[in-house]
Structures are given as C-alpha cells and as structure tokens.
Image 1 (cartoon, rainbow, N blue to C red):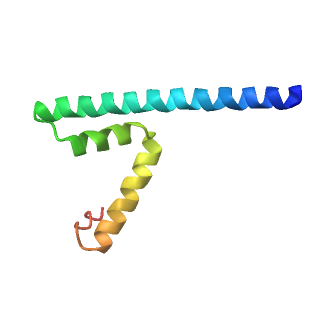
Image 2 (image 1 turned 180 degrees about the vertical axis):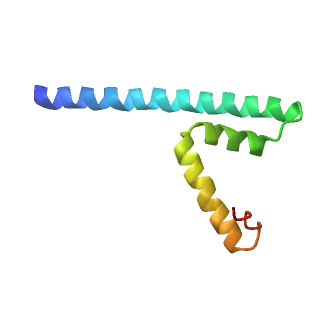
Length: 87
C-alpha cells in the first residue's frame, strides 16, 4: 500500500473517530436535556409547553410574527377563532 493510501486511511479513521465522539457527546447532552425536562415536570411545569417556548425563543421576532399571522389565518378559515373587529 502506498503512503498516500495510508494517509487517506488515517485521515478517514480520524474523521470517523471524531464523529463517534461527537455523537456520544450529543447523546449525553440529549440525556441531560431530558433530565431537565423531567425536573421541570416534577415541579409542575408542562413539558410540551416548555418545548414550544424553547422553539419560539430560537426564532427571531419577525419569523414568529409571520408564523402567528399564518396560524391565525388558518384558524380563522376553519372557524376556530373569531375575526378581529374592523377598525
């Protein structure tokens, strides 16, 4: 086997090992997040709502406003909310 193949093999192994370490870290972090949600639930918080709040905080204000407007449009079309008064 040539040196080039050996170098490529070593590089490939290094990438794979880094990915494996990061995947393990990701699993550890996901477990930690699950534990925090469990703690919050134990103190009476609704975890579904907490997850929604976390997702909303990731978005900027303009994106949230656009999504809310579209949601309101859909809910109005389905008769799930009343139309706001004109004025």
